Length: 150
Image 1: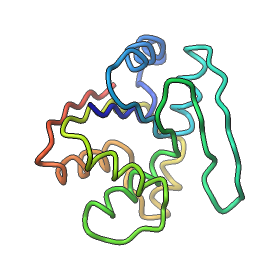
Image 2: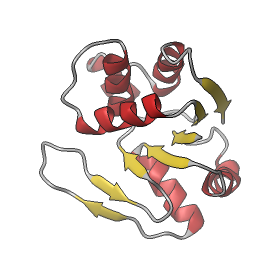
Image 3: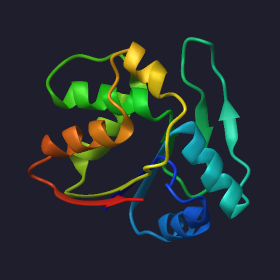
Image 4: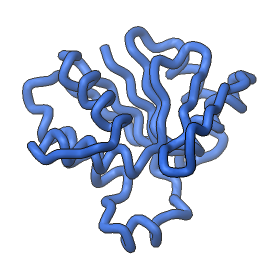
C-alpha cells in the first residue's frame, strides 16, 4: 500500500487525528507539501531534517517514519505530466511516479483547506491540489485507489 498525505485538513482541529492515522498506516508513506510536512511534524512532535542543496532545487525533507517528502502542488502537477507521457526534469516527481507505478493499491489523503498560494498556481498554469490529484487518479485506472478528502 502506498499512502500519500498532501494538503492541510479544512478543519484545523482534525490535524492531530489525521497525522496519527497517517503515521499508523501500513505501507509506504509519502508527504507532499511543505505545510503538510510542518503540520505532521508539529502534531507528532518530530523534528524534520531539511536540506537545501541549492536555490534551484526543492528542499529535501527527511522525516522519521516517512519514506519520502517533497513540495506539493508543483510536484503533483509534474507527476501528472509524466503519467500523461510527457517529459519532466523534476526529480521528486520522477521518484513519486516510480512509487505510483510500483504499487497496486494507493491511499490518497487530500487536504481541502484554502491554500494561500492559489494565485501563484494560476499564474504558473498549475492545477490546485484537489484537481490535480483527481486528474492523476484518472491515469491510475489499473490500481486500487482510496481517496479521502479532509
